[in-house]
Image (tube, rainbow over the protein chains, first blue to last red):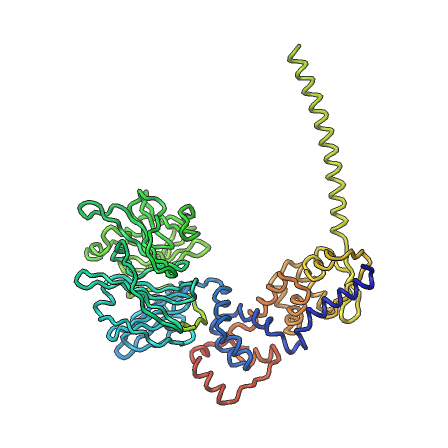
Length: 372
Length: 182
């Protein structure tokens, strides 16, 4: 190719590249989207008002998914409080928990008598305590799905274990409810979306420990700590009971070391060993060799606040720490069985703690609409 | 004797090894010199305002549109690339940002128009690191700002009717608390 032909060819490539842009005042939509992927949910909701084309970019379900993947993890948490007429969902960051008194980042009000069953991808699963229907709700956008009837009584819904998560294979949000009436166990999966459905599936081979009825959602699975009982009903071994949301079947996942007697929840677990609680993470879900120890929490941290007699009974054989999150710089937030929040700085070996009534769920704010 | 013989053989071996090594070093030396020449090499670019600029190869290497072209054709050093969408002013800003190893402090000194023009140029020249850097910088500028500020930043005209705007404001009520001062 001679120089003149090369020049023509290069110009052709460049013109092709720039054809999508008319003037600077009019940045192509592709570039606007790239900027918006880096903006917080709160700002995005305001920017829907900018003009019609921005409103349609921000409202698009695909944009919500991309934003969820692109947003760096700011650890946030939810807690609910019921007053006479309504229920408030409070959103906290780690820092806002430790202000005195704890000051939420924001809140939203939902109809009374709704309890949180779980939270995943910025969507909260609510269960009405009287009517027993379940609803998916996004506290950031205020969007709620139509309620799905469970056809259960209130006593049944909360009789044993449950979980809420995202099935990424089928792009569906699913709720698992296990009920037990007169020793008959029924396991049902409620699938949200355009073709919502209820399906009875095979029961779990094990029962999760009573201290953790809510399954933790990891990589399209729900997970509970489950004891395997030996002779005289003594705990022989702990495993993770796992429910695959795509195939809708149960399986077991092994803990880092079978001989260690005490562990808790996935993805992070605690192991009592040599006067310390070890925090482990399974870096690649289902791969036994990927268990990695993140930090050790000295026993004195938990011994400092002994459980009351009743709490001890409730957590028989189960460790007192439930890890909520671990940040990159080695700060971990735990909820203890005695209703306290514990913030442990592994680099300095220091900790803060305070009493916090009510349940806490991890939360990752998003624009995702539950029914799309 | 036998031992000595072995050791002298070992010495011989050592010498040839050393010689090889020295040769090797010489070869390595020549290569690094060639590498150095490559480092100092410049590529000629002519900007939208007709300015011909000689840009260091290390910076041009981030411009994938030019790299792909150099790889596919046998252009020589005298070839001048017409960068018809980028002005000499913006190209200078880009060079500063790449040399400054993408420091967010540098981005703070840029005007709103410069930020947008660099984003367009980064997309046009296919400079991935620069694109990510500048898109993040713009996102930081508009984060938590009022709708009016962002409209002004992008030069966008509101095309909603009053009713449509009121309706949207109602559905996103809690997003409007605590907006930063423009």
